[in-house]
Image 1 (cartoon, helix red, strand yellow):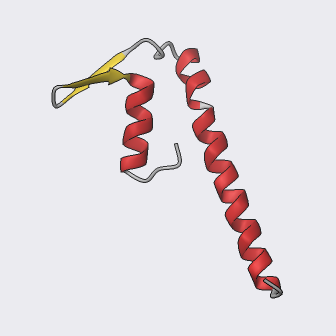
Image 2 (cartoon, rainbow, N blue to C red; image 1 turned 180 degrees about the horizontal axis):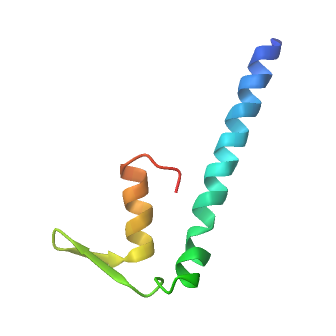
Length: 65
């Protein structure tokens, strides 16, 4: 922890994590703006609200949002 490279890497990690969390937090307002907040998505017999489906697929496919 006394190495400067540790703090550079730590700062980079915090900035990336904060950016990802902010992008994910904005999915709800974006869905509401586009009128998708009440839409349903069906895939392989699984029916979910569009926002929940987007969050689930985003985590499975390792995306930020």
